[in-house]
Image (cartoon, rainbow, N blue to C red; front, side, top):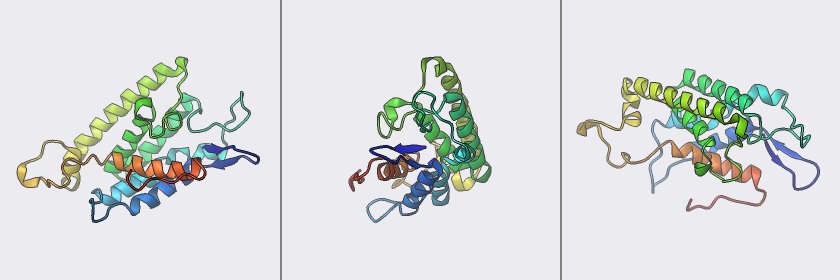
Length: 206
């Protein structure tokens, strides 16, 4: 969950609602200055469903025994975090391999504080005794992404997007160097800004 507590009452935003907002941003992506990412439907699905693993947890959210407040998406115990995100990734993979690859990449990014969308806010807090569990999870995600890339390279509609080496006749120079994995993160960042920092707005030049 995302929690605002500048004063009473506490405002709680569900991860699934934040993801839906990210999906709205995704569907508006692209203009005359830069192309929308392709496959576009997969991109939109990844943005809108990147937190769907939280659905069950949000029905009965855990409470931090120290603060007596609901756990946030940063502070939820790592073992729970791993389970709910793996569940969400597997759900998306069943619907769309490329969207699943993007969601898995997003989840890996949560454990890399150097790549946090909003340092101090959007990186998973891992206690020292949880570090091995987190490290093992990230390794499993790397292997899962490799398997997804192999499957995608055998699928003509998505082969270009998932493989770095393409025959010259299949290349599209205007999109060749764009890392589409960053796009769902950008939609997510704008959603976080709107729901997490009251009064803030994303800059148009981000």
